[in-house]
Length: 193
Image (cartoon, rainbow, N blue to C red):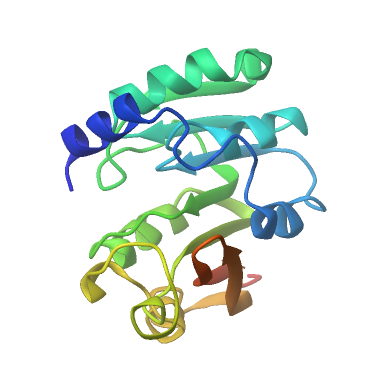
């Protein structure tokens, strides 16, 4: 998919993923002290708005201009805490180091490259948190893309995060009206010097 496909999707169905932050991410992030974050491939901004409500300063980036416009309109309470930006996950760069890079449901063959780049943005003790549709959905679950090329596995994420301290790497079963969906969660930080 390219940005025009996502522009069309957000035009046809504003907030296609709901207005509430993903419960798995909330559980993972709620105990972290607020700091500076990047929400990469933020869509219409539900996770960036949730972080902002907890005191984070967030660069929220998506390649869909329609999604970013929807986020700016849809989350006025985020105010100056979120800097909404149109940008590509493969080329965008923050202007300073961050405490958190959140990547939720970015499904791309280039995910290892995205995570490798994101790793260079972290402050000491900063974290990368990835949550996305798992390749296991093709055999066992529902939802998400149907191409195995864009679906990570636990093993592919372990490889992409090689050399980092992996704090969590696991499958997450998410109940949906159509049945169980299988996601994969990865949380990592740089090894102490």
